[in-house]
Image 1: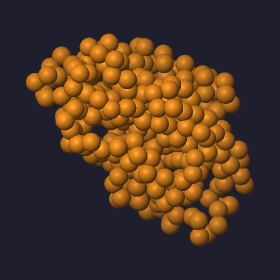
Image 2: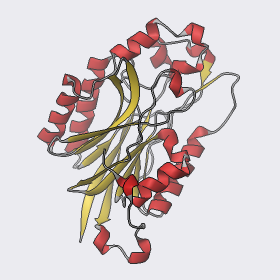
Image 3: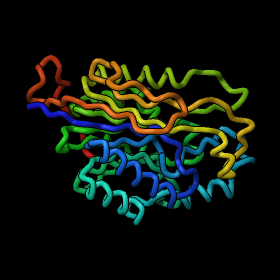
Length: 296
């Protein structure tokens, strides 16, 4: 059995360090995606309250107040902000993949929420953030976030997890139909290693789609440096780079929608023809999942 599923990938600038405005933005984008007929909308990694790019700066320039502000503008998994987002998903009958900074245990985690069209939610924390990310976020027990939904099996991973073969293989074994690859956008410190991270992330997405034989939605944040300056969140004079580009890929790794221009804000929308596992040829199905498929 197959079904046509319209999906949307967010490419937008977060409301830096402003929890209330960030929640309003997420709800507005949920409504905009729904208005375009989408049944699933995917958001970038730590979209609320924005990825802390000030980590690139020396610690003496950002610890203290900026870290406290970031924690204060993060969301609790059982808090009113996520309840409002869940209600919006239920009201609009749309599935939502949302990357957010989760405030818990006197710290913060890089978390992903997968919300179905009835408002039910599962949350998974990034188990092993990068060394730089661990200056802000805690580590957690790994729980691959893969859920059975009315749209098929949907899985979510954040950013750099797509470069970890063991993590990706556990997700492949879970038999995803649709995968959300949540990226935070990109910028780097001046004088740092010059790497085209946009190309690296796109290559990782194409490789993942082909290996998992699933559709892939890759939302990304727009990261204009004046945005951080307006939030008084660091020194943009020592940062440079460009934002990422959202993509929607088929199981063969090819684009299903023409990407937006870098730094352009909007929704990338495409229609997927999703087949259940029973309809996929045996050679195209991942191996039977083991214990790593545990749902978050």
